[in-house]
Length: 245
Picture (cartoon, rainbow, N blue to C red):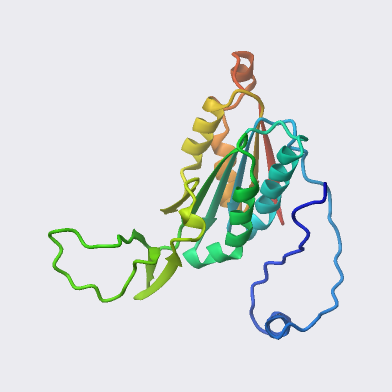
């Protein structure tokens, strides 16, 4: 069948010079001729793994998101044995969610019932806090409503500013969870390996610190030849890095 994902999307940090001119061209729908070089190497074939854990930090989601989309498409076509995907993404600001929210919503809607997907998004900005906003005040709350949040599920309070996210967005989907602080990768990976019944793939793309955290979390006794010999799942780690990891 034809692929569901036919777009080539770039994440560009706009500064001055070329990136600023590129933003101006995009905002006016101008066409720009580009030359694309690569790819260098190939991504692992995850079709034979029963569980795939995808971990990204910041723009590292430019690797893990296409992997997630590819898994969903292959499961739909009967070309993958995958039955569970865990998608973990660390970002500094809740606004970064808009980089991929439309793609994630579409992916989750296309995913077949046989594929269990769990999305964990962690906002790590030091001054950021995520607060759930109820649609009405409690019986003992006499504070006046200064802003109608009935159409919003949460807000980020950062430097005195409020960022709103509509509750009919990504977070209306039960499998998507948003949390403050860094993800507990040791606990996440330990639990997923323990619950797995077949082969497990762990893919990570991000900073050296998040890569080291994943490596450390997969050390003995979570993953080792001894655990496999005792009947535990085999675990394969793949690191995608722009430099040395």
